[in-house]
Image (tube, rainbow, N blue to C red):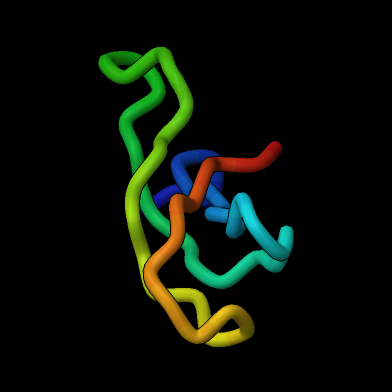
Length: 51
């Protein structure tokens, strides 16, 4: 798995980077957005892909 396919996911509430995910940049052009559990907020929040 190449490093360029890694995407860091950041909590939209507290701005902490909690997760890393893979995505195919050739087929998925937009940034990833998914609901994940944030350890700092202690609840499920929207996580968005960062640079």
